[in-house]
Figure 1 (cartoon, helix red, strand yellow):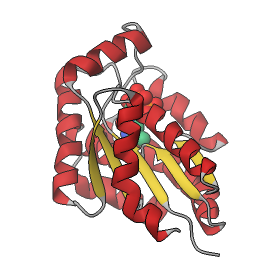
Figure 2: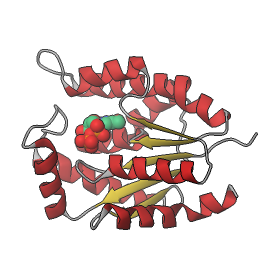
Figure 3: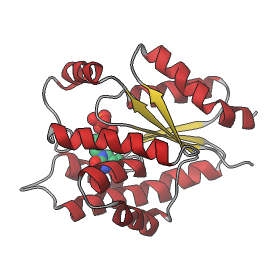
Figure 4: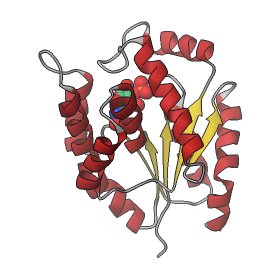
Length: 212
Ligand code: TYD
């Protein structure tokens, strides 16, 4: 059996990643491709428990290093228990966020640096990388409107950080896609979800054609 493909969706807050991950999984299933739709932090019971600790931290919250370690620990469990087995079974894994979120949020915006984040990923998950990472990047005014509709001004411990932190996250994702054009595709995320979905399918067409 051929190994499945691993696709990650990335981007800052309110870019529409979760919707696009779901639409892609549905489109693949409709074509008869066995898929596994999952998310980070989370995806396994242990990693979902860590998600709760990260997004609603007890007490005074986590230090930068502790936060990065917790994301890496959640990812290690997710990779070993869900992602690698699914790929080995020939399923396509569609993941809402993966290690490039740690690189953008903890590494760049959180100023821990790329080396530390990559090292934690090597230790925790043997450095597994997606076959393709789709960075969704929508116009700022549209993102603000979506976030107000979705969260009504409430957000979790990370979503609620300063505007400069999130601007740095968004810039980091754009930089990644310029630095590694073979592993990333930058998808314009404004417009209807159907329009964005069509852009996602277009960006994945080389991988989809290989599988036929
Ligand atoms: P998510 O539920 O995808 O949030 P949203 O739908 O609001 O984009 O992710 C939860 C939060 O965790 C989000 O603010 C991004 C953050 N995060 C990191 O800081 N590092 C990581 O490695 C991951 C996976 C997420």
